[in-house]
View 1: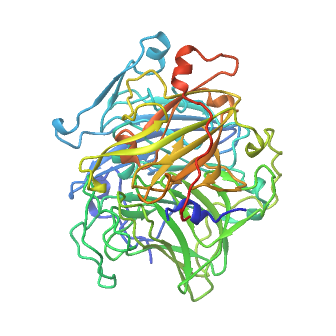
View 2: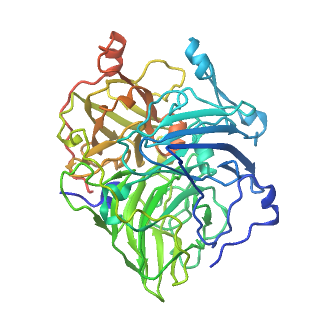
Length: 594
């Protein structure tokens, strides 16, 4: 049985002209209520995409800092569009500047090995600070090595020569929506919250899902940011909510009502939708037109529960891909389009779906419904993101999928759900509370392999938390022992969700990010998910992280590392000690609600 995506993932106008100062603004942003414009497209040519990106930031009058990547022509956070087999060459320049006094911008110094290759390819002394940067290519199955998709040792400093990323999109990379963002440990939240994120699209989804052939496509990136009006009173239309509370970071805590001050404002393609009135951005469509919407939740900490309303009624949304992977890509059966009324989308996740626009004379709304993040979580209330305006004169989207595509070849690998795992591992989320009686007071965050000691992730450690072998498949059971919703993510690969809170799940698609429900203190066991992890691809060889994709949790220690060794290499005694992979019986959940 395929369970609704929303149930699984939840715990639960015209463009405004830039201001006069925009010419000096490193990362200019539209005004609230603006038309939602799409990012520029940078496309590969003759099998190569070569671009120059510059990381920039700027301090705002309200004390916040914006971050962005600009290309050689100054376009902000462009879409990178590639095809399987393409070579990608990115010259990354760090133009970040100190935005805080020196005593507030303390750098993390992580000492790496001094072998010749490390000195040649990566810095031997790794600095991670508010002005360091790098790139992570979220979802792509490319090697976790320097100059490709390494975030453990790669850190570019202001004044460094441009750093070259050079990698090839695998021939069998699923066509869909991926993204790129900085992954500087300790400072990821600050930079992503400031807007440093953008889409990467592997072309050819119409070759996997013929139902989208010929459709115009739209790319929408939803980001969060610090509140523009933090001291504003709630809108008069909102009901009165319980006592206002804040968490350890000063963000509005979850109040369980679906209303009240949010922890963060949201934006759509940088058009801000600020509290308390949430003036929506404007999306123009031709009446009744079908489009493929590619939506990325690039938020640092905010969960989404996306829904489209016409006249207050939820509209059918035809899911065709999740986290960059087309559904039913492996041909195991099921409907080629998964029709839902809403999608739960944790930070880092992506959904691609068919939407038919409103008829002439009717206006639709793109909204996010409230998400219950638990007693220890932030407040993610109901709010509107964009108004969908039907107009016969709406501009044609600049990107349209092939009308008569050549079908993709069948996958070479056996469907992940049909492969027996070599072992079962247990991991769990937990938190350290500054005040044991205050669930919002967490100041340390852990993601622990069962049998190891809970501790914050240590970038200095050369010993991985987990050692696996390429060519194998494992099951990971991940519990949440905290009172806060967490989003599990792993680099370099996708996984299959097998169980959610003790219930079997039959999904015909893969993910790279999934929610793990919070512990309410009343059930007989901790909430958990069971995931089938796929280490068969040779590109997974190397060391890379897994973590909670709420970036303030990752920055504060909720991360671990895994080393995937070549299939022919036997595990060393050190590897065996780090492995902690003994097989256990899956825990049974009792008295749990989905």
